[in-house]
Image 1: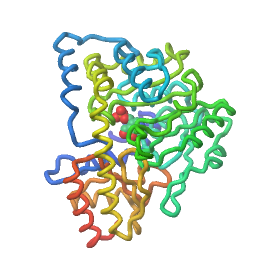
Image 2: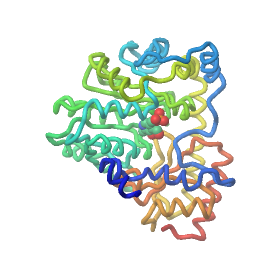
Image 3: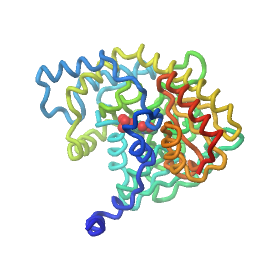
Image 4: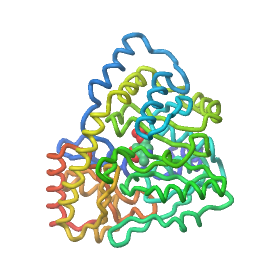
Length: 396
Ligand SMILES: Cc1ncc(COP(=O)(O)O)c(C=O)c1O
């Protein structure tokens, strides 16, 4: 019966591999003594100041269908936020509220690529990109970043050589999940110029822009917004999840040229029919009054990164680049052939929940990923447990 039912769904839904992050979570969730560092989120709940407006909105009766593009106060707050951080005026009409960054990505892919089309994607990358492209019938063309002499490097010639007549876009996630690799302004300009020349969409994912450990005083990573016009062939996915500790809210945004507004509104209508109005009230306050919170999160991430790096450096079988951005450590473990099997064993044998590198696509096998935006005391304990495991066990 199971196989009959499975044969009755599309090949794409049947054959899509599980996300290894979710496999790790499903294996370890609910265990009393696990220290989870598998998902990309901090350990703190959303601050009360951002929850309160959502609660009040519910109690005011804002429980109806709402604007498909997002409530006007939130779209205006998004424009103000961008004006503050990117140093030029932005217009609310370029912003569309989505159900998480994930739905912004779905909307983008659905809008620009279908069966037979290709999207060029540097990897290792967050698995949801390739997964969603395959489910939509588009083919991710994965271009490996090189890991040599302890550094990740994106070879732009290799990236551009992957463009074919079927290509619709290049995706760039910077700072990157899982690598923490961050594009320079020159990288971004080269990608912009190539996309302009070849008539491709730029898909930018800058959800970790604020988690940037570059020069002193810099409060965000280099961005396509520094060098591109908002009305050009560019689509940016973003989210409330990371900066404001709101992963469970499932609210994000899409920034797009105004010419696409009706097309985006239709896709939202026929997918989710909009994002709950009461959630959007909390997000509006997060944007307008959340700067101290974001600064605190970034400072915590930076010091945790250094804590974890110092601990990993004690093990000669581990290699990694100190990440410039985001909040993940992506490290190679010598001798590991099967990162998923190793991840599940470390959950069972050491009580630490990593994510398997293999799930991040070509170039990721042989690595493990951990999120370090966690309580530093628990991180210390996780590193201690993992260190003990390394002394007595061999990876699978
Ligand atoms: C690179 C990247 N983009 C987008 C997202 C989407 O976040 P969400 O759907 O939680 O808003 C994530 C979440 O982990 C991510 O890592």
